[in-house]
Image 1 (tube, rainbow, N blue to C red):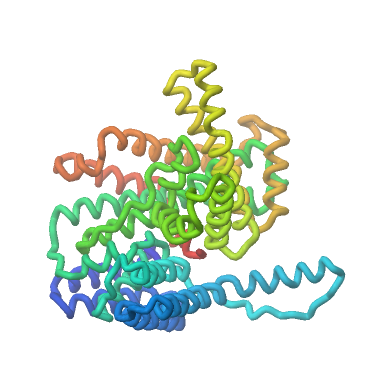
Image 2: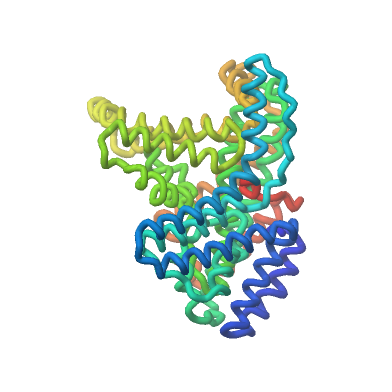
Length: 475
C-alpha cells in the first residue's frame, strides 16, 4: 500500500476514526493490526519475516535485560544481530553477491553454471531491520530497558506510517510514547495535515513531475545532448530529495495526527556548506544511526587522523551498500567517504585561501554550498545508474558540452514545469529558515486556510498522478 493511492485513502478513512474511538489495549491492537494490513498489502507472505524478527528481538531483549554476565549478554546481542543481518543479507544481497562471484570467476576465464534463486526483496526490510536492531543494541549498552509488553514492541517495529521508508525511529524515542493514549487534538491535526500536504506536494508535484525527464535520459544517455543530461542530473537531485523527504513528511504528519512525535528526517540538505553538514541534514535518522552504532563503535575520530579517515570510509561504504545491492551504490558511498576525508584534509587550507582572497562571508557561504551541491550531484549519477556503463555514458556526454543551447532541450514543457516546481520548493525552504512556516500555520487560522488551499491547488495543478511508488521502497 502506498500513500499516493486510492487504497490508502480508504485505509486511513477507516483506520483513523476507529483508532481514536478505541482506548488502551484495544487501540494498541488496532494500531498493530492496521500496520500489518498496511504492510501485507504488498505481499502477505513477508509478514512472517517482520513477525519473526519482532518475536526474536523481544525475547532476546528480555533475556539480555535480566542477564548480568557480560559474555552471555554479548552472545544474546550477537544472536539478534545475526538474525536481523542474516535475513537482510539473504533477501537483499544473495543475488548480488552470487552474481558478483560469477562475474569474478568469468574474469579468470571460468564459466560457472551457478544459478541464483532470484530472491524477491521485501519492501522496507532495511528500515525495520535497523529499527529493531537499535532496540537490542541499546539494551546491551544499558541505555534502554527491555519493553515488557509484546504488543507495544510489535507495534513499535511495524507502525505503519514509517514502516517501509522511514524515518528510522529508535526504541528509546518511540516506545515511551506508547505509555498512554493520545486523544485527538485539533492542533496536532492541523500541523500534521500541513506536513502531509507538503509531503504530497514534494512527491506528486515535484518528484513525479521530474521523473519522466530523468527516466528518459538515463534509459539512453547517448541519445540526448549535453544540456539535457545536465538538466536530468539536476532534476534527479531534486527528484530523489522530494520523493524521499516527501515520504518522511507524510509519515511524520500522520504520526503526529495519531499522537506520536517522530524526528525530522531532512533539513534543507542542499543548503549545506560542507559534507559533514550535508549528512546532518540528509536522511538524518539513517546518518545518525550509522554514526552512533557504526562510526563511533569503530572508534570515530578518537584514534588519530588515519583511523578517522578509515572509519569515515567504512561507514559510508556500508551506508552505500545499505541502499541497494549494486556496486554503483557502493561507489556512491565511496565517493561520499572520499568527500568527508577530503573535507578534513583540505577544509582548512581552502578556508584560508578564501580568506586571503577576501571573499565576503555571504559569497564564501554561497561558494561552499555550490561546491557541495555539485559534488553531491556527481555522486547521484552513480546512485541513479543501474551499472557503471550507464554512469560513464552520462558523465562523458555531459562533459562534451555538445548542443548546449536552448534549442537542443527536449520536452521543453516538462523542463519548464520542473523548473517552476523546484523554484517554488526552494522559495518555501529558504523563507522557512527565517519565518518558520509551520509556526505561522499553527498561529494564524487565515494563513492556515490559505496555505492549505494553495498546496492543494499546487498538487492538483502540477501533480503527476499515477500511483508511482516511492524510490526508497526498493531499499
